[in-house]
Picture 1: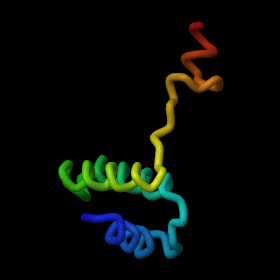
Picture 2 (picture 1 turned 90 degrees about the horizontal axis):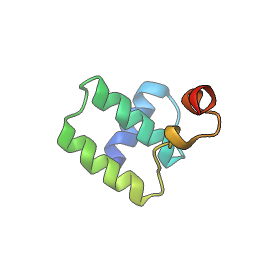
Picture 3 (picture 1 turned 30 degrees about the vertical axis):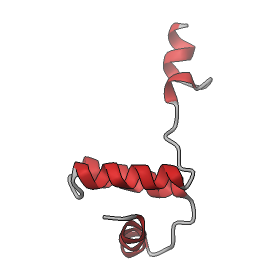
Picture 4 (picture 1 turned 30 degrees about the horizontal axis):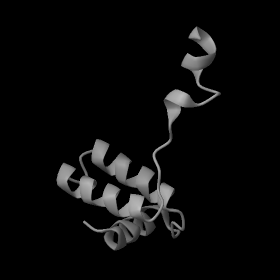
Length: 72
């Protein structure tokens, strides 16, 4: 699966176009977790989406992280 196919799948499920690469990255992650796409497809999508500027959230270093506030 490529990004253009992911965009099509996103539109079919959500009924609107994803304009942000991060939205598509989240959508791809959900599809991978629910075994809707294979790991090899997921890896390709992640590389392509990162090249488009998508980034995974850095939860561990977030100032609002529960772990950060609670234990440090």
